[in-house]
Image 1 (cartoon, rainbow, N blue to C red):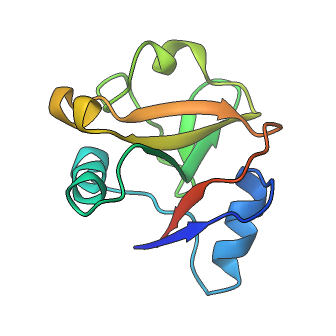
Image 2 (spheres, rainbow, N blue to C red):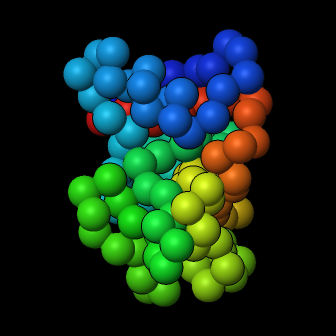
Image 3 (cartoon, helix red, strand yellow):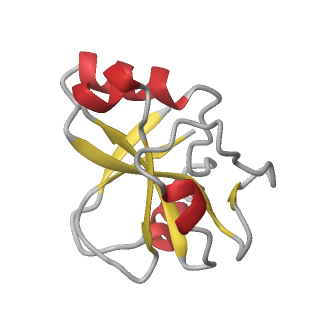
Length: 120
């Protein structure tokens, strides 16, 4: 995977478009905790990385159309609360969350900021 940095205010859709310019898409990690651990171990921790899933109104869904379940590594109760179409997935790479195995969270796609995202 490749890490990119937003230099201006952008959202999930902007990140996906940016990945597409390089023939990639937002990362859909098979093991989100392992990716977060890699980022932390390599000096890229304490950040929120946009990744390739978003709400469809009923569930959070990977770009591959695979539905995330309550067994995925959700931080807090995001699995039950964050399924709206405008809620996008990010991987929160902190040592504390890696240690407890809870690295997935969501935020509204309408929320823009400078930040980072993962393409793969």
